[in-house]
Image 1 (cartoon, one colour):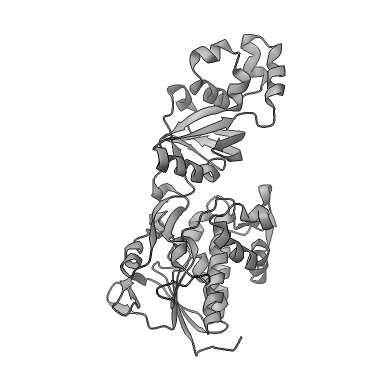
Image 2 (cartoon, one colour; image 1 turned 60 degrees about the vertical axis):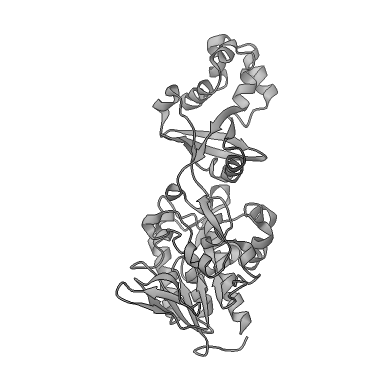
Amino acid sequence: MKDLKHALRIAIIGGGPAGLIAAYHLADHCTVHLYEQGRNPGRKFLVAGDGGLNITNGASDQALHAHYTPIDRMRPMLEAFGPGALREWLASMGIPTFVGTSCRVFPQRGIKPAEVLKAIIDAVKAKAVLIHTAHRFVGFDDLVRPVITNGEEERPIEADACLFALGGASWARTGSTGEWLTAFERIGVRTVPFQPGNCGVESHVPENLRPHIGKPLKNIAVRCGDKEVRGELTITEHGFEGNAIYPVVPEVRTQLNSNGKAALFIDLKPDLSMERITGKLRDAGWKERTAALHLDRPSLAMLKAYTPMERYLDGRHLAEDVKQVRVPVHALRPIDEAISTVGGVAMEAVNDDLSLKHHPQLFVAGEMLDWDAPTGGFLLQGAFSTGRWAAEGILRRW
């Protein structure tokens, strides 16, 4: 690749993971200006790190790819820059990582999310990337040049190519509002309305379950359609959330969009077969049945809440009921509560290198593209992978 340093001027709009890694990669060959609407880049990155920064996932090949949609578009990007490459990149800037439970990857114990972000920003600055904070994208001019404002004046950006990494529409307090969608529609880019991605589900919470709001049901399995996930869920004021809920949200969303309603099936004892449960209950008295299954109070309350009283008291179908508690769902929680969103720039609107088909000098990456993945490190990995892929696409053009 020929050295284009100073010959090619690239603008990146958005200072999240996708924008930062693109800036880092491009700066070896181009003059790079990064525009961030906040006072500092990566605010949403820090919010995502609350409670522990799950930065990627150690799953490999098909086990990794299976968590992404649309997989045909995401696979090449994940293969080009996957979890191993991301961990090596972080290690190069002094951020070692380790694999925790369920293949989740975290910074080494004691390293805070703010330290990870600072290391990335310092590495970007060390490559002479010019970072302009408090600069917000407001649309395009008649020449389809991006227009930004610093709060006092608006001006178009002069650049050979522009990479947008504006994020989705979740966590508006971080500046991720999705307001940019209209601007892209006005220049003929096909977009998809934003919907909640990883989020809680809304369901009527029966009275006997309400004392357990805030409590988790651990080691359970949740199924919706053909998707089943092991993990835990938490009972909320409005329904349920947790790592066993988020991965089935796409199935829930599909059912809601098609029928206006959906249903979850919760297996309270996924480690026990129906036959094993039946055997445990066979010699147990009526008052000993739930004790024989070692159901904790939230799990027992869940079973009672969604099992008709006559059926529960009868007890003949208890094994079946324990294995599939049916929970009706009437909605997903609002976008601003969601960890991520789906929607944005349609994949059909971008070329293989993530440039816009109608405006090939403009590239897009990160959550503003219409792709989906669950929590567990997959979201951040997708953002980093798409950002680096778009940067490579820019370099291949010249």
